[in-house]
Length: 120
Image (cartoon, rainbow, N blue to C red; front, side, top):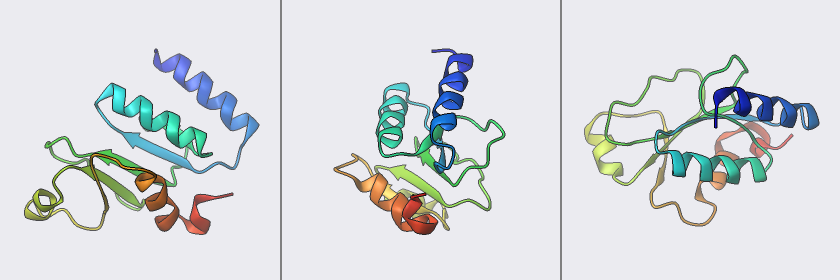
């Protein structure tokens, strides 16, 4: 799907529910990214898969073993299969959700770190 179509879909959804918290979803694996997008949108969040100028409420990053992007000033959740490796790399100041994702682990963590549980 092209970025134009994704942006148009996000704009249409934001027009229907303008106060939805925006989650910036930085996940390289396309099937995982789309599954997470669907799940988060179903739960009432707006989702962007790259910075697009809208103010985000939180960032979700998949730890694929590479360097994590620097995100300052936003609550950040790192999805990882090896939390110990994050500690060894000196990653701090983030919330961690273990993979494989089970149940509502991501949405529960979002509700914990966002003001008002992420609800509008």
